Length: 469
Image (cartoon, rainbow, N blue to C red; front, side):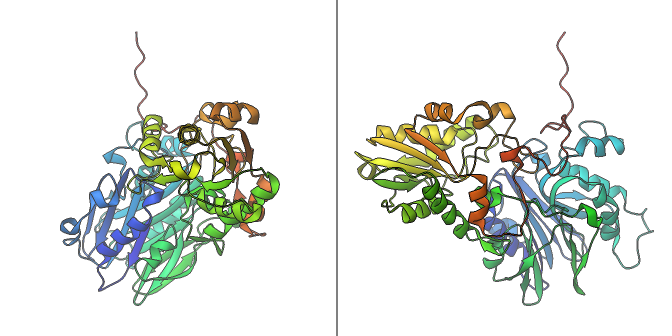
């Protein structure tokens, strides 16, 4: 997500640049909403940022305020209808919303609002509808123009789960982070403007400087008067639990979270992994891209030379966040290719960030052996992923998670490697070096900070299929 309040600046082009820097967080659809003070224009479509926007689409988007979004679907299918920002035409000119995360009480909220299945397409769409219903009747709005703010203060305390939001009406930019801060959101400053972004590199690309992370449970409102903070949630609900996989895989390596650069944490993961699970080998290599910093750390600590064993096609996106298994498997074959002269005849330590379904690792092992590797020792810079995530990562059910259904020796055999070792959770937390920080590690431990209904699925809002007769 990205948002910018910058009168006199090309906010649509700035939003494009910000979204481009955040493309790794979602590849299914992209969109933006722009306000000129009187109207809000929304442009969105399926595909990557560069597929949806070009100079022809950006030039007409004139204004002083904009939000943007790249989607990775969790609740709600990957369709144009569910592309964001979500828009509602209430009040003087409506409002737009972008959401990162996943609500856990979606079904209860929809039922409480009397919404039948199929009325809204996603949990983000549901939130927009709940906010719209809190807007006053036409002609009865607040004299200070803060209808969106007032509606949010009513709706936000009813939401449960993971939600970082950017919202806008014609005059205000709003950022919200849930009381646990599962998903990141930061604040930046421009000369004459303000910026909100999921990750700090999106600030750098438009020349804004990082001010701070939005705090868990905080709502910031930006308008002509400046930036102010509100606290919509009761204090007892506020408990920082940033997703630990932001450090392992999701965030860019140049992102700062908990005042730590992600790249350094990933490198330290590799160092601790080498200490914890040493192995005799000729070359340490990382699986591009997120396995590379940990591989560098493993090599440095072990003394085994570091080198490249795989070439990545940089025009292929992240296979993990592709919406189905067939696309993930095909994506691995298109994305990676071995460097035969580097790996032939060598004992390899292959470092990757995680094993979820095993799609990438099986393909990589097969390619390296075909290229002549004599041994393949897999080292994973996180613990076994045994539990599904309900807070914004579509990792599937337990039946799809390799470590939920196999022992470590079974996984070793299934992946075709000579040995496998995972970083312990204790060492993962040590590597991040943020001793008083709170993390959600439910996917590794099964301990969920926010209660998850047993009926929660990606299709919770869809119309049930008719049964056959």
